[in-house]
Structures are given as C-alpha cells and as structure tokens.
Image (cartoon, rainbow, N blue to C red; front, top):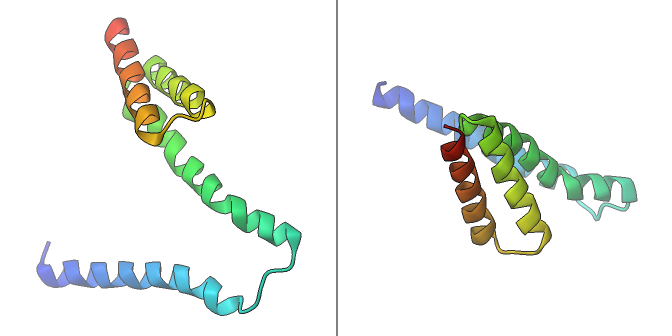
Amino acid sequence: MEWSAFFKYVLVMAGVTYLIRMLPLAAIRGKVRSKFLQAFLYYVPYAVLGAMTIPAVFSSTGSLPGAIAGVAAAVVLGWMGKGLLTVAAAACLAAYVVAMILH
C-alpha cells in the first residue's frame, strides 16, 4: 500500500470516528429528560461490547468446548466480583486446558 493511500484511509477513519462521537453532543444540548432514552443510552455500550465480543470468543479458540469453558469461567468469576485480570486469565486458562484435553 502506498503511503498516500494509507494516510487518506487514516484521515477518513479519524473523521468518521470524530463525527460519531461529536454528533450526539451537538444534537443534544440540554439534559436528557426521557427515562426511556436515558436507559437506552446507558445500556448501549454494554450491548455493543457484547455484540462485538461474544462472536469473537466462540470463533477465536478453534475449539467450541474450549470456548464454552472459557466463557463459563469468565461468567462465574465475573459474577463473583473478581477483577478483570483474574477473569481474563482464568478464562484463557480454562479454554486452553479444555482444548488440550480434547485434542
């Protein structure tokens, strides 16, 4: 790829990212009074994160039972209130161990 094309792509990406973040701030000047809209805006980041993460988890391991074990370990430890590093390490370890046992 040529450098000029690369910088054009980066510029377009930066512009799109900026517009996505700036438009809601410009469109909604005052405080949002609608309880429905507040609840909707509160849960959007969690829904988007889940929609991006869950399919990647099940397709990245190459072993469906390993992926299920990793997700189960993450859900259980997350439910118990463990930290992010502990949950991520345990999920990786569970997925690895189950994949190694089955293969």
